[in-house]
Image 1: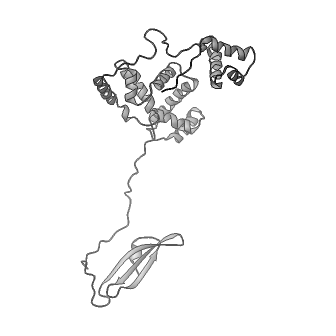
Image 2: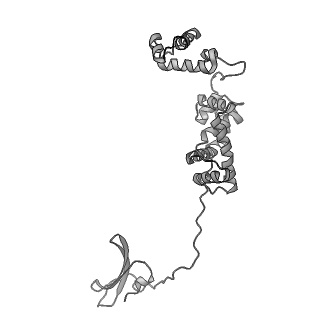
Image 3: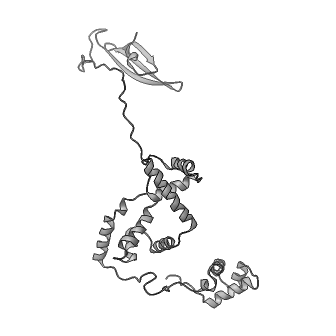
Length: 280
């Protein structure tokens, strides 16, 4: 059985305010005297300082007016759910990646589909909470100073991304903002805003090298996998391997007589090239 939330009326909250401002009692003393939590006292006092007596009124479960507030939940229609899911897939929100995926899902809900389906159903399909969605809507209506600043910086980041054809990552974008617009900020902020915009540096393909290459020799297959020799110096074979010596790689080329597996000659070099095969 779930825990029952205890509620307090406005008169009780006024008593807390009077004890704090008129009698000068601290948060802990008030909480101990009235038998309530310390965090509850602090929250009520913060609401009173921000909104006055109106901030002490109970707001849970109250609608702001006709047609406002969160809609009442109602049983979901399976066909309606499938239809909403198909429309959401067509909106291509699943193809979005990065820090801005949640924001983009909120935009899809409020701009494209909230007039057709319930917010509860759309939040469930989008994988976001309804409470988080309404908080996001509230932030859009009254953005903070930080949000206003972020929006200005995002426009400049898009300017840089478009002007330089997307070849700059967040560190070079940070340098660009500093040199062009004299904006000094942490690179992590630039990285976060680029994630919100869903942009990142385009990795340029490395161009293949078409310059002069070393000549190579293709020898004929004289042995044809017949490695038996009837006399010395009848059949020689060679191979190249590498050895690690004093922390550096050396290449070894050796010639072996197939008659008795004796090493006839060998050569050591720092490079694996044709000169390694010219055993003196």
